[in-house]
Image (cartoon, rainbow, N blue to C red; front, side):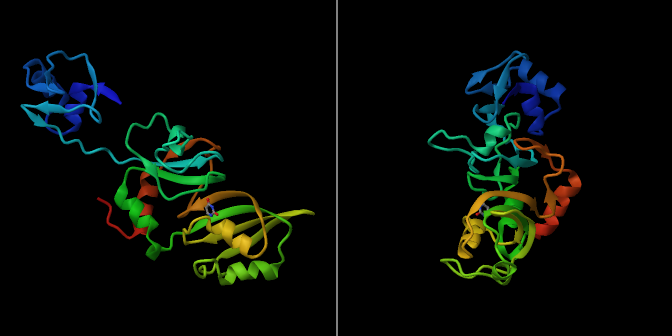
Length: 243
Ligand code: URA
């Protein structure tokens, strides 16, 4: 994101904005090797090398945290070499280098945390902390309670047994059912594979809860920043000290 040079210098913590203006006017600032002596120009600190008195600025990026309601058809990656849509296309105003916490399948929708706080993200993804994730699956057919008990007890997937899940039948109709399932593991396509293991095809899957956070108030394709209290709570869950 392009910003005024005095703002970038001030953010780097080496001078106030006013003092940074003086530095620029006095010819002490270069951008990509060129001395800048005017105040009006805008520059991009993530792409351009900015130096004061010949020393490059070290810019600690502000940590940002968002809760996104991912629609189907977006990849949970920061970039796609084939140019397909990614979840970051849904946050065009965010200039920090953010990425999604974990993955939802391309055809899964729902709650995804987006941040640039690597320490928190790693903590939350660590299996040790057993962070709960709740999904609503619309499945073909109506599975019996006996079948759902298999998911509750833990079921064998190709790799190994899953941990016990909390499973609740929400709705049934003639030929399909809506089932809520809470797991704390994060294996690849885990919920779809768990249902497949009891002979149920998942027609639609939505993550409705992650680490106590819900989609309340966030429409599909929209996002909101996390509150300070929510961030503090995530730090607690991840078992790391908040800086
Ligand atoms: N389980 C799945 O099968 N898919 C997801 O996207 C998330 C959990």
